[in-house]
Amino acid sequence: MAPTRALNTANAVARPAFCRHPIFSAQRAHNQMTQSYHYHNGSEVAGCIVLVDGDKGGVGKSFTARSITGHLLSSGTRVHCFDGDYRNGSLERHYRNHCAVQRLDLRSEDGFSDFYDTLDMIEPRTVVLCDLPAGAGARVESEAERLRLNRQFGREIIHVWVADPGEDSVRQFKELQFVADPTRTVFIINMRGRSEPERFTIWLRSQVRASFIAAGGHELKLPHMPVRLHDRIALAQAPFLVDPVPSGLCRSDILSLRIFNQQVATELAPLFNLILGASS
Picture 1 (tube, rainbow, N blue to C red):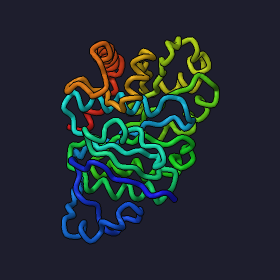
Picture 2 (cartoon, one colour):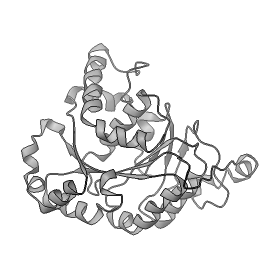
Picture 3 (cartoon, helix red, strand yellow):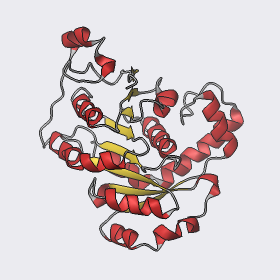
Picture 4 (cartoon, one colour):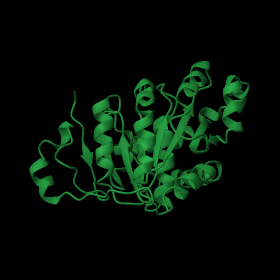
């Protein structure tokens, strides 16, 4: 297994030596001297856990995770991010200089165990955001009970499902929609490429959707980002932040990014209300 990396731990303190992940093997002697724990009881709020999911690759999970992270940081919220695919650290590339980011293998039971152990080293009232890897559906389903039990430690689960127009996305969501309470579950229609909502006809006409909405679930749209801006941000490995101005972006990019961020704030407002309400 490729080693994971822990980066920019400005908002975190050292992890305990009993964690199994290879990244910490070289740091354990130091960590044993500096470790600090933040255990919580059910009456304390530690900050919610936001799982950005979708199971299939290429649906825009990482883009959605970056959009959410950018808005939270812009609003002054403390965020600790996890790239669930240790081979591809999208959050690390774009936010390593702005918040704590770690890579883990969240396709495995050990990876999730390391994730849970790390939560005790994250400062209270810090939002924990996980960009889950593609193909992790079976693992996430197996972890559902352990995920939900984090509520006893003050961390509510918010499940964000980034959808694909196809039938597979609806079927997979049906299997995983109970990872979190329906009122804390968000189905994201990604408007990339100026997609029309009608492309999601299978979802819009499904009984799964009807039951989900009736139970208090949230259906939201992630705005379209202009292709030129998307490519410039990717090239510069820039965050979705405009203050300070990211290196590699010009004025036209910043203007377009401001508009996109305003649209994200409006369209995903119910999600941000959930996150902040569960973390304060």
